Image (cartoon, rainbow, N blue to C red; front, top):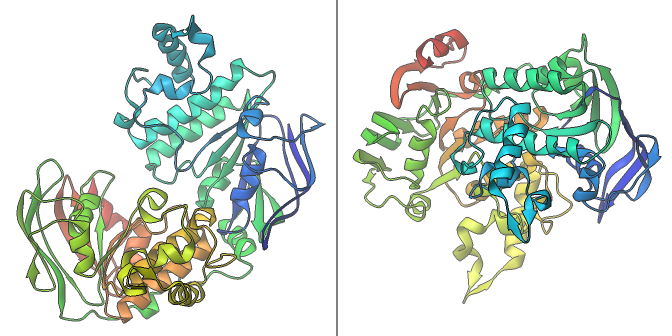
Length: 500
């Protein structure tokens, strides 16, 4: 259905794809894995027309093809479900599904909303999603929006001949295990009329769903692995070109935390979000908030930064009671926030790497209102080297970096500013195994430097491995505390028992 022959793609100073050979057969699920910066995103963008290849050949159903834009790719039966989601939140579900293809419902310049709703209902039935098509998209859960994305792609069935090729970019990154299994069940059902390209850093899921797995490294295909019988350890080794450290979470570098209390919460409450929250975060400590989605951990973290204001209780930062809950006040107190939605809240995509890194400390780099660009670049170059950020230069657009490298830019923004209270909200979400190791190393370095880290981990294993202390949250309240000393850490079952 789709074939790449020696495909090349070059950007100024970067050869992103180096002679890629790649193909997708009818009804097949093809996995695509690699470190951040390996070329996965570039390859995906060439497939759906956002980028145009500058060498080699792309064939669709055996015919040489060149897409000038995503619309041309869609009209050839190639659609994409995006990791960060492409839906417009203030439009209805049906408007999102038919965005750009409203003409069949227009007569004399007026949209027939009843006909559009009926057509949207048919599309939603394909993905087993029972919601009112007139519902505003922002009111749906992340998993429901993911299904709407897929329903939107499946509308191509009515516009093109033959089967579809559907690209799934990190579709499971924030889904629960039950939601992942529902998605996989749906993918298997749709194989009779679509082939899938599945991109994920969760290797166990890639192995579970894929017929074949392409492993990319530095813009090249280094191996093609059969899904059946594949082992994640072997794929990891091919991805990073080295063995993964046995001390994955750097537990050998975990040191006892100090007595100095950086953050203290007493009886914090926010109606409908969390109740009676009390804790202390000390210098050198990693304190994890663990719970199911919606348990209240993220809201607690955003309160510490000043994005949300509690209804009751008190919050003290470095011995001073917080009276103004604003991000500016949080930053002034030395709090740095690495948010879950890094592309929305973490970076400014249109600004350079060095501008993003110094964004929280611009006064330090200005004289009489004029920015000291040389000093900004010097700081950025130091952190690029320290965190092993893959970028052509510090002048490159942050929005064009891979997800893991964007995350490192956000971390360096706060560390270079001298923040010593670091809030990490799913810091390794959508990040490859090599970049995760880098981030774990940075967490240990921050603790050694006297920072306190409040963490919401991507997995329970990550929370247990990185933390000194774990607080299990259920329905907005802390249910249980666990001490996580090396050699005597709690088990997954210990945490799950109090989460559910």
